[in-house]
Image 1 (cartoon, rainbow, N blue to C red):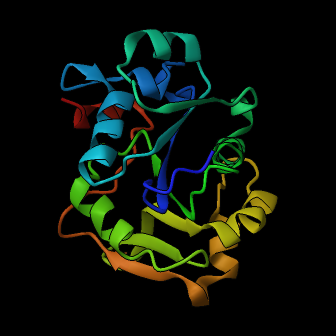
Image 2: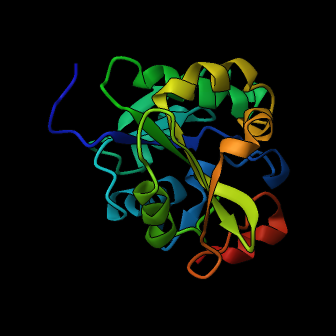
Amino acid sequence: MTDQNEPPVAALLLAAGGGRRLGGRPKALLEHRGRPLVEHAVAVLRTAGCTRVHVVLGARADAVRQRAELSGCVLVDNPEWEQGMGSSLRAGLDSLAGTGARAALVSLVDQPGIGPEAVARVLDAYTDESSLVSASYDGVRGHPVLFGAARWTGIAATATGDRGARAYLREHAGRLRLVECGDVARSYDIDTEADLSHLE
């Protein structure tokens, strides 16, 4: 159902990973500032101005639903989460079909160093359904990324394994607008035991 009062950009939080290199601890449930990491990531998106947030769950989805405060979010189950981030991106984009969203801002649950300022900059770069925008850090492409709805089919067709939208972004590099965020955010991932030091 389309709500004319909804902003054109919906947020898509990919939070399905099983934390293979973290001993099988799902990233969504890692603790950060006393709450599950997925809750922190949703709060960042909301603070940045995202009112419609779709969260893609996979590993231990039931436990995430029980432990994290995700009211107001659309929770999307990805039964194929073990196939990698590409499957979560496809599931998330599918969930936006028919909602009236004209673009998706995609963020990752395991990047707590990226706060509302960086998200807001990428949001502000939206122009229309052909928008293709990415945060960059010292000129290097990172997250979040923003995909206009006209690009979703092409992205879904190339989103396989853990590559997500990388192949699509490479192919359309000439149309990609980079928004520098290195002055307001740090783009590290929580992938290994050593990375857990970034969590508070």
